[in-house]
Amino acid sequence: MLAALWRHLRWRGLALAGVGACWITYGIGLIVTERPSLLLAAAPILRVMCLEGWGGVWIVCGAAGLVTAVLRPGRDMVGFAGAAGPPLIWGLAYLGAAATGAYEVAWASVPLFAAIVLLVVIVAVLTGGWTRRCACEGVSRGR
Image (cartoon, rainbow, N blue to C red; front, side):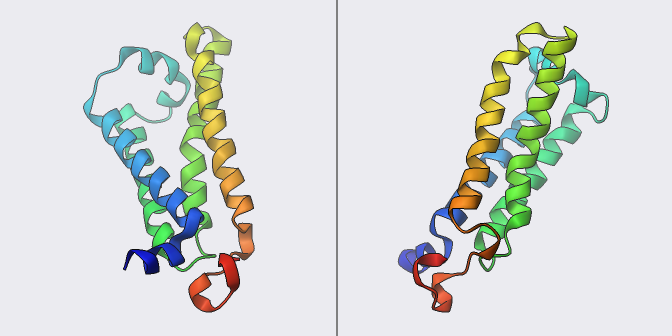
C-alpha cells in the first residue's frame, strides 16, 4: 500500500502534503496563540484582515496542498499556489513593516519566507511543472 501511494505521490505530492500539513499547523497556531511581535511584523496585512482570519487563510491553503497532493497528478497547481501564497504575502508584509519602521527587525524574517516560496517553486518546476503525469498512468518516472 505504501509503495502504491509513493508511486502516485512521488516527491511532488509529498512536498505538497508536507507543506500543507505545516500550513495547517501554523494557521492553528496563529488562531490560538498570542504573539505580540508577530502583530507588529504583520501589521500591513492585519489592516486587511484580523490575525484569526489570516490563520484561516493558512489553514485553507494548507488543506489545498493536502487535497491536491493526492489528486491525479498534473492537477495540483492550486496546491502549489496555496503552498507559495501565504509565505509570499507574509514576506511582503514583513518587508513592509521593516521598511516603514513599524517593526524594524521584521526584515530578519523576510529571507525565511522568500526561501520557502523559492523552494516551492523549484519543486513545482523540477518535478514536472504543468505537464506532470502519474507513473500509475504508464508514463515512466512520473513525468
